[in-house]
Image (tube, rainbow, N blue to C red; front, top):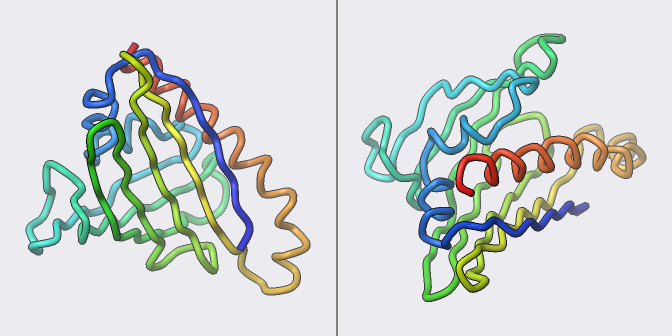
Length: 159
């Protein structure tokens, strides 16, 4: 699988950064407007709608329409892991249904004194088999713009 990674230092404590990224509202706040994100539904691990925290077993149904071009794309992700220890935390979401053949996104957070290092790591496979593999090197262009903006938004919200 191909991968993409971005790290940023946020001048805010780990707990504040972790809490911000642990909610559906945090996802909405971090997503650039040009992505046209709509959170269609969120279900917690117990089956209850609209949980306050995205625990392991939660499922998010989203739709996207980047730049308002083309039909809306539907995407379902499941939070498959979530852990918090002294000095670090992470959660992982995996695409259940969506535009990629595979998508695994690990959100990691590391205390750095009074600041936090935020790291996004995405392992993915584009659709269309061999044709998708040819296009893989170009996919980082889209990821770079989106994740640069997400990290900028995290700084703006928490610093």
